[in-house]
Length: 141
Image (cartoon, rainbow, N blue to C red; front, side, top):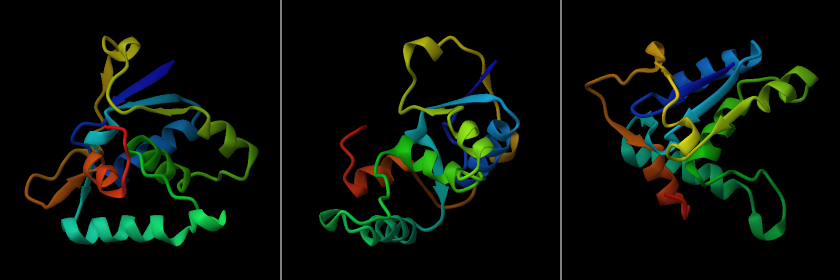
């Protein structure tokens, strides 16, 4: 069975931890609207943190770490850090995760699961993954 989650207005780290436990339990998880997942914090500090992660890997010299710029890959990278990816169970669990920018046609009518622990806190500063990926230079919107 496939669990479909709409990422609109959900908090980045909390959603990633919930998704990590789901895929480690053996569920197949699909996350839609990755560009609308929110990262809480001061806008300038969040952008500086993500920019630093991208700048650490020297792309011109073919040395890592290579950090993604697209919103869907940013979320997958966050989940990857929460699972044991060097073990067989971790690799198999990571293959059960599918993240999309927007909502593909086959998932438009699917029943979406609400993740209560990742809901937006009403009175805080935040920025979306779409804005972060646009700042980092992603061409996918």
